[in-house]
Each structure stands twice: as C-alpha cells, then as structure tokens.
Length: 254
Image (cartoon, one colour):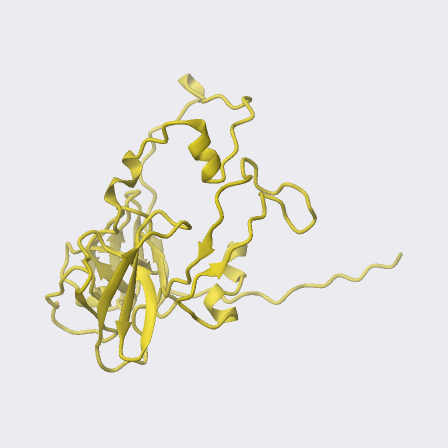
C-alpha cells in the first residue's frame, strides 16, 4: 500500500533552493478546514525554515564533489545539527555528523566502485562502495531520491551484507532493509548525540517547543494488554519505485 505522504511533491521540487531562512507559519495542528488534525500542538517560539539538500551527489555526476564546511548551525525544525557547506559557486545545508567541524573538507561521490573505498566521516558514497560493517546515516531509499533513513540526532545504521544487485543495512530499530548499491549514504553518526538525554525541566519549555499538555485520559497499557516481545520482521526490499497513481474522479447523479 502506498503511503499518501510519498505521493506529495518534495519541498525542493516546488520551490527554488536557497540557504536563506524562510518564514515558517505555524498551523497549531489545524488543517485547511480549521479543524484539529494533530492534537497537542499550539503556540511555540517562532521558527525559520532551512531547506536541507538531502541529495549529496547527483546520479549523473562523473567526478567527486569536494565541499568545505563553513558553519555548524542549530536548526529548530529537527533534532540534528545542520552544516552550511560550500563547493564551487554553490552553498547548501546538509545534516552534520557527530565529529564534523568547521573547515573540514567532505567528499560526495555517486560512482560505484568495485573495491571498497577508504572514506572518512562526513563523506557520502554509494553503499555498494563501502566496506561491510560501515556505520552510516542519511541512507537513500531509491537512487537519486535523497536521504530517507537514519536522519535523526545520534542515529546510525550498519551495512550488514552487500552484493552486486542489493545491499542489506540494519536500521536503529534492528529492522533490516534491502536497497540498491547505488543508494548513497553518509559515513558516521548523526550529530547532537545527547539529544535523548536532555531534561525538559518544566512544563513551560514544552510550550516553547509547541507542545500542549496531555488531556489526562491516556493510560499506559501493561500486564497482558501491554507490549509483547515479538520476533523481528523480515527485511523490507526497496527495488521497484512505486509510481503515484492518477487521481480517480467519481461522478454521481443527484
């Protein structure tokens, strides 16, 4: 079954890319009809939106792209830190890795090599070019679609097995996925490793973040109604890209 959010156009496909922070209006959890679609959302501090370039190297790119890390910045719209990198005549935002610093030179390659490459943290290569056991993040679901897996703060994935036509990676949830060797991934761990250790401290800080309090009617299920320990699900294969279906219009007589 196709996810409805996968059929929506990407933000970068609709608007021209820019590194200028853009206005980011808050909806308060309400949809275009004025009704609440998402609960526990209201208020919060004003934010600016930074467009992240999720595709490190283009598929048709022949030579490796070298970029210099200009700044490591805080992004209010995501848990990880972002990096402003410059290469040639262009600048863009990418997800920063844990040990990335200002002044580092990072490499982005789309070429699939027969032998394993020796890459440093922050470099982006196709997963088929990396040695088995590599710790990666920002993995593509399909070649050329941009990073889809392992993008949150402190998250890593591991390359378990690889072949000529498919590669197996283990996600932080212990679920394994099978993707094409041409799918790109970034070496290392996502920045802001201690994000899950932060202490909110008071209810007001959650309101700054835009979260409203609970209604008080939710109770955790425990005992025989609680969480079950189940075996891991089989690996999920991403080999054929699902094309968005055309909208169906139904005509009725009234």
